[in-house]
Image (tube, rainbow, N blue to C red; front, side, top):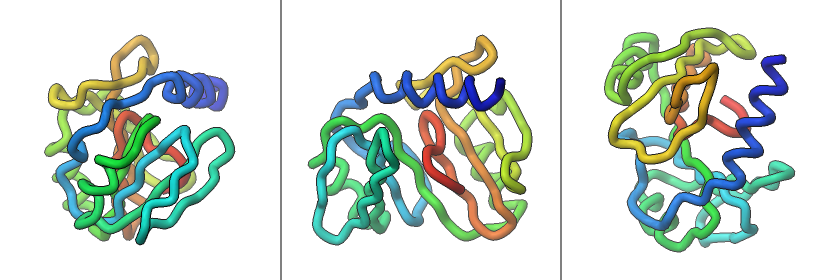
Length: 148
């Protein structure tokens, strides 16, 4: 059932296109944009994830890359850190709604007033997800797509 809910959320995200603008996440690390259109910005890695593409770049390049992208349905940033860093990142993002584990990683889903787009999970608006695998922290909006 959980896989069906996640798949439904992913399909809903593909219908949502976030307008061009600044990056949404306040962390420095490896930045990823989830897009529905195949584009290949200079200096970025592009992964075909099947129903969307993941464009990954350094944080310093993220604002200029973001300005050139259409069809963005989400974004995430991954950076090294420990448990305290994970807790601080979650607190920085906003209110925690759900906690759990997936694939050996601690996962938190929540809601942040400053993020304009989200999905509905268990009847609640969710617009960020954070994961900690013991070495790296990934924070995404509205959800992390791909892996963490």
